[in-house]
Image (tube, rainbow, N blue to C red; front, top):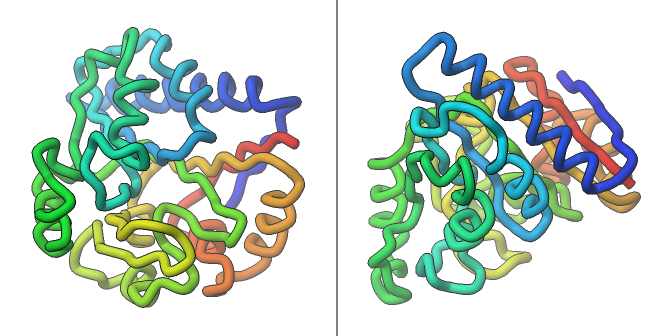
Length: 232
């Protein structure tokens, strides 16, 4: 199930998404002691992070984590953890609690043991209440890639854990990712996309679930409504 919102530009999308997410978090906090937000990394969400971190809400009661992460040290240039610390955990949002996926003291050597890396992430995992996905030009979302050997496990309804190790094949670095089942268990799910190329991929993916476009399994799920936010 999908709700589709188109905005005028990237700035408007970032502001709109930040307002929606902030309200979702407030609504969750009105019913329970803590709320958990899972976000995606990459360069695309930076404007959203900067808009969100200025929103007025009880950040000291909010957990923030990643939907997926590259299995690299947190000081690595490709680490999403570093990106989140730089752009999201600032201003009002610096009061939030960070739930790590990769240990700060992890090294290139220690991270070669991916099973151990996943175990660390699972120890800090809390089921998100609000989740923001991105989408690659190949239709991947989170780190569920079409060519990944772990694809079948990632979309299994009965996979025993909410996180798994994936090997993208078409992109650098091993990954730790939320599974489809964990995404589907999230009450508020957003997909932020931009540009004609990704719009074309989205239009194909929304038709039916297919391994060609992993995001299609989220868009066509009957267990969750995905709010798509798009700008040209």
